Image 1 (cartoon, one colour):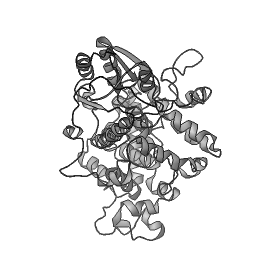
Image 2 (tube, rainbow, N blue to C red; image 1 turned 90 degrees about the vertical axis):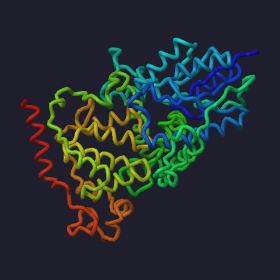
Image 3 (cartoon, rainbow, N blue to C red; image 1 turned 180 degrees about the vertical axis):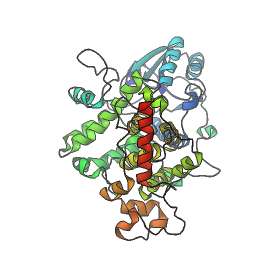
Image 4 (tube, helix red, strand yellow; image 1 turned 120 degrees about the vertical axis):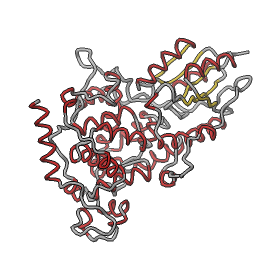
Length: 453
């Protein structure tokens, strides 16, 4: 009897362009396994929105595997213990997997490697994190030179096809029932907006890509407009590995126009992984130690108002309500909302990062941490703290009127540009938490005190 080869799946829930799956399929019977490991990440276990997405994605992946005569085995627990148990049950001695770079997954890979023969492959990024180096052989910490060096290595290799078949093991070990994992919200069921917006799974990812290809040439012109359909909305599919960045690059790179701006966003995702590879605690530690002395406010009521989209700044409130309803927020609005929390409210960026971690369907450790530290001015490559976005200016600049009307129904009937900054507040809509000029002066004073201290 030929021992099966385990394919350990994590954030790579696809069949196409999957180097670990392809390699295992060439060796013998394949045992695809997903382990719900909440122990290894500890406080970094997936947030509620991500768990909703995971449930749908696992359903889709199992259906796709069954078309190839295979199936998905679900187990729950510490990854190395679960995989060791499967070794005893099936005789499998080898595990193939794609490399992951979050600190907890690197720890898990070391633990798995002690109990089984672990073979790691690349494939979740344009280039393996840690492989794009300066002339002195050091990893980059600044995006622009990193991107220039990465582009020199592009295009990525052609994506691998879906295996034509997967050999089945002699017997299938028992699998958990997905419903028993309680990944879906029930009391209450707050996921209606996400169900309406998203189709998790490899098929949904491919449909998103197909819909975007024809728009890619105008990406730079439309990406900052919240009411446009100029963004790809591929971020959650990329995060869960339902589609590879190489597949997206190959499909869009020849679009012409301003597609290079979009490709740069794929590069930013690679850059974020390189940052957390160098600084594993980037999600909770200031990269610039001076900011440890910044006078953040302990203002729980203000934090809740921001989370609920009740700040009195329409563009901020629209973004926060879109996030709660759909698990996603337009990127330009993310920057505005993040800047507002950090600089208008002087609330520690980590409180915002924690909220996004729980509510985003694309809650990626590297990207989330790098983007928040960029907004806060605390990162290795970041916006200066003293550059403070003015929400009431940003809103008309990026034509966000209809976006606000959609997500802030209290303002839906306001005409023209009054929706950006209503002088007369409709019933139920709050006054501004703080005036922009007052908030700006306060933030600059706190920053100056930090520097003087």
